[in-house]
Image 1 (tube, one colour):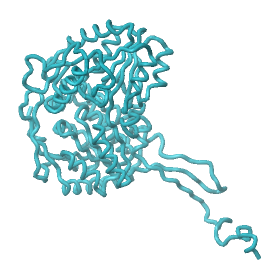
Image 2 (image 1 turned 90 degrees about the vertical axis):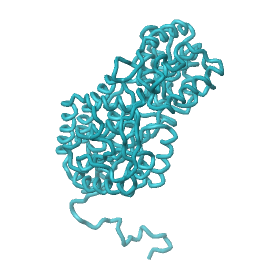
Image 3 (image 1 turned 45 degrees about the vertical axis):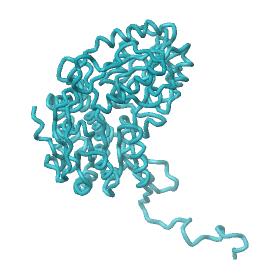
Image 4 (image 1 turned 180 degrees about the vertical axis):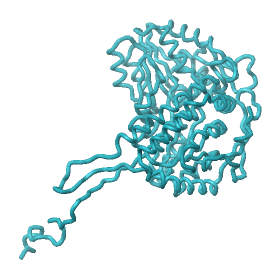
Amino acid sequence: MTFDPFAGQIFTGNAWRPASSPGRQERLDPATLEPVGRIALVGRAEVEAVVAGANAAQRDWARTDAKTRAQLLHQVARSIADDDHHDVAELMSREMGKPWGEALGEIANVAPIFRYMAEMARDEAGKVAGTTQAGSFQYARYEPYGVSVHIMPFNFPILLMCWTLAASLAAGNAAIVKPAEPTTLSTLAFMKHFSCLPPGLVSCLPGGGATGQALIESEGTHLVAFTGGVETGRKVNMACAERFKPCLIEAGGNDAMIVMDSAPIEVAAAGAVCAAFHLSGQVCTSAERLFVHERVHDAFLEEFARRTRALRIGNGLERTEIGPLVSQAARDKIAALVEDAVRQGARVVTGGRVPPGHNTGWFYEPTILADCRPEMALFQGESFGPVAAVVKVRDLEEALALANASRYGLGGSIFTTRMDEAQRAVEALECGMVWVNNPLIDNDALPFGGWKHSGIGRELGRQGLEFFRRPKMVIQDAVPAIQGWWYPYGEAMFHPKARR
């Protein structure tokens, strides 16, 4: 398919148009290294022009009743649900390497979040409190902030964008999306589904760090939702703090998976393959550290490796489960982490190399390392690639202690058939999400987010909506009347020596 309609474009006012900013960046297909297209690098002046339009659209949107807003968001959902999305899926696959079927699967989960948030915003818009004074009506109302900024990652560019976009729009805000550079074209293509909304309410401004910085620093934006790496997340958090802007930070993880001796080996191994290698390990909730009970360690490792070797590697538009990593830098990082672990005594069970026959593109074999130790670099940060580090443990308590010995706390999982082990893990794992026998699942109605350095705030669920609304306390007396505590004070209010 052609990329020309979106190359160098922005989306604003319900239309695509060439960016006025002169900067452009060429993007390469990570599987073939062929040019995909040139994306715009939007500058500060263009940012401010779009921000002004978003504020104008938001003022009308905020005055729109919740029922009408919900109807329009349901219209967005219908537009998404009625499209086959083959064009966007192909764009996504060619931009960042995701297998085509996975790209379609990502988009298939988008329409329900707009329906959910549309009705959630109608369900509750405030709280009436018991009065502190007779004849007074006292309540809180929830109001939008204004214009939200959404700084997106490349791995799930449409789904994660819509998690926060749906909540922000349902709350009454306008929204400006800054897509990740590797998935700009597919994000722009998806913007057609927002054309049923008032012009200017949703915009998409491509660019790099400077574009994101300009959006955060603008006086016309009022809160920020960011998904990405820890270091960038820290910078976003600091920039928002300087301006007293609320920020939602989802900054990735180094998730642990525990496999107990009661778990069915074939189930645990199959789950580990998906948890560790889905999207070539480029998932914030990937299982990167596996702690396996000594009684089943060898049998699990054998089955885990067998299933991993069966994965097909190749271009995302072909018959494949494992596509390329998003960039050369991403592959170089993985290769260096594996080499470091091997130098420190880790054993390569499978993988650990560029797959034969894939010298073009940023491919790396799904890799299992055994005999790993927590002091290895793999355990210190988010690898974000197809590497699973396996550690043999004596019991659940050792596994939990090692799992929690991380500055990250996004998710964690356990495979077991014992209820006491499952409950102990749910209570003891220091992370925002726990999966028992079924990793990586999410739910529109439940909060998604992490502890520790993995982020601030929550997406999805009621908490995901509340981030985009600010409360206002209202004290309302129907009848104007002078109150007894107003000035001037009665004699009882004065010090005894000052009384008449």
